[in-house]
Length: 324
Image (cartoon, rainbow, N blue to C red; front, side, top):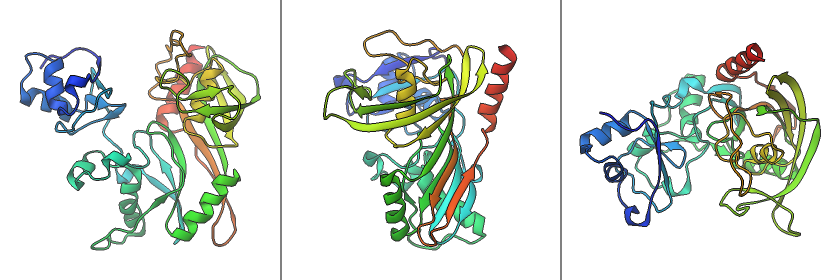
């Protein structure tokens, strides 16, 4: 089956509520039903940035469907999620890139078979814990794992989940008070000096992307402390410490300074200006949650964890060092 090398399609109103398979046949004239289903099964089709393995998915107007030249990597499995700390209250894990933290609300009612095609991290964790403890999953209702923060699908790194309501509430208060220690490593375009970025973020800066605003009384305050670590020629390895934890905060702040993350495909375009070209060849958005610290919700003990760059980003940094 021959398909375009790469193509991106915005779902028009007349294709809204059509299945993904039907839309693909519309965009790929001459392809049979079995051929477009195979295209989906081969992990070459994404919807709104996420690989979609369900040809029967109903599309909405303005959904963005991308047909890639090559198959996406398989989704992370239970063996790819490493537990760093576990007790009856919390679990700290190393999140691999390529998996979302929780399911989007519109997907909550999907049948289990459909969810299993592309599991989320909170859905995998009960099996990860059962494997770690060498105990079978209980029959009936699986114990709930409670997310208290999130990492983007393509971001790797340390995360904490609550296992009880009490732990969820206590950790939630720590995040609200900004007492959680979070340090990220990022590879960016260009070079910058150590500084603190302090802006107010809004959902739509004027082009349907999140961004900063200068309008008084609008948006949520976002504070990021940035420090350069290593010069990589045309790129830099930098440290980002979060004082607040807004959605896409690091990605937005660095991009607005003119130094988007390598691999960035959303915030690499300044408002009403051409996109900033990235020729780094990054394997994904180059962001990693390297340190996490918090107060245990029951014992009060201060817990601190560190995680090195994963293999894909370490190989990327090594290549940039060789090219500088």
